[in-house]
Image (cartoon, rainbow over all chains, first blue to last red; front, side):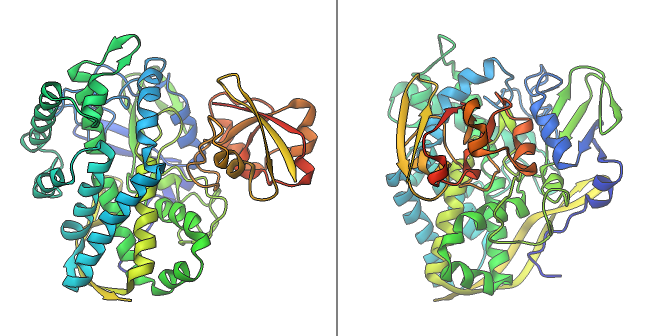
Length: 386
Length: 102
């Protein structure tokens, strides 16, 4: 098996009972695995809610014990959700603008050039984290230099080596965002903090806590996911030089290639919901106040929807993947993420002849019933110039 | 050449002309409000959802199974819903009227 392979640990359960079970910190989760069931649950926000009282409970592993700030609009249900989402959507579509893409191209060119100069480097810390952090300055519309601090935090902002969640570490981020909000109040500019502080939702000015909720979501939601997508892309093209050559020869398949890699990687394995009434998923009874999750990674390998689901088919034309979620709460950062992938793949085809994996440590998520490789803790790669 | 009319949520009606590509691409090129085409046309994002004028349902035809599945749990779905990334611009679509779902 190639190093870049991400196998499907859910097949048997998905095709059998249709769900899996995970005991997350004594707050069990029924994991919904099939493509249709996942979409059905994501659609039914009344029975499977995001905005319950216990902030952080829909995240798996649960963040109930490490976070009090409600992430917005992620942990708000309709109809309130719409006011926040309508405010944020135009800002998070800015990656479609030419000027944004030009700046993103500069950033990614810089990261790839650094890699080519070094020759060999550890991709997670020295490539993906840098790329993700620098690109995030564009999304927030703040100076590039701010990324240096975020890079210095390392990849593990929310966890330490021995535990999935670490409150002290998470507080570094929350305290930082508090300080940035105060700075924006004292000295407003055209950054996301200032724009939100000056905005109204449902006829009321956004509070500091609400602004913090948007920023915590933006930082947390776009960190490990983007790092995994970028790192897995490097590993994939290192293992498949013919695919890199194909993208060089057929740039017209760029769009389908991006969607296919995102499907295959599914950088976010799952997302939870709190059940509001006694009901069933996959003919399995679930009680009010319990939790389910929609397992995007399992749904994206459903053979009933995707032919050769475990293969990367770069020109897959119909690809209804749910890697960015589905329905009301689909990923707010998807436009930014897709542009990162587009610029990264384009830059690799222009500058990189080939890459070689020298060594790696896999990042395996322990989901009780399943073990899923989501990417790498570290991966040493040699970059060869075109 | 096909002239296609989009009715958008702001009450505007816009008619645009196209010769090839998908209806979603045509709408994005012409900045039709509510058609984003985030996924570039692979039937994943449902940000190109339109309602076909019922009288012209025979012009577009019904969605195939996968497209239908994606629409099934979309917001504002109707019996005349289509994802416009799956509609190919051609002479056959000339005069088509679409109401943007979002």
